[in-house]
Amino acid sequence: MNRRLLGFLVFALVLVGAEPQPISRSAFDLATAGLAAAEQQQDPTTITVYITRTGKKYHREGCRHLSRSKIPTNVKAAVERRYGPCSVCRPPTTRSSR
Ligand SMILES: [Zn+2]
Image (cartoon, rainbow, N blue to C red; front, side, top):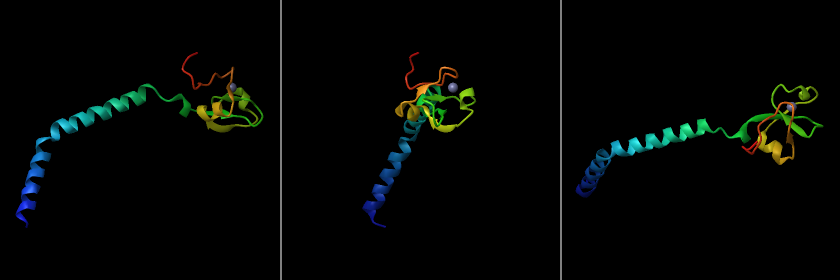
């Protein structure tokens, strides 16, 4: 084997071997923090709601207004298509303020 290549390989191995603790530790912390943040604030726009073929409102699962038709979508898509939240089942909106 080429001596210079061997020297480089040893150098690289030393580099990798010297640093695994701090690197993997911070990566683990980052992943944990990201998971915690994702759990705490679920994006309301990804929640499944239902629209009807004729109505102008979107609904939660099981709303009594969903007896005729029930088309699954999500909050973001429903709002973009100018559906409003039903006043009976009060589904989540894209705005957090109430
Ligand atoms: Zn409803």
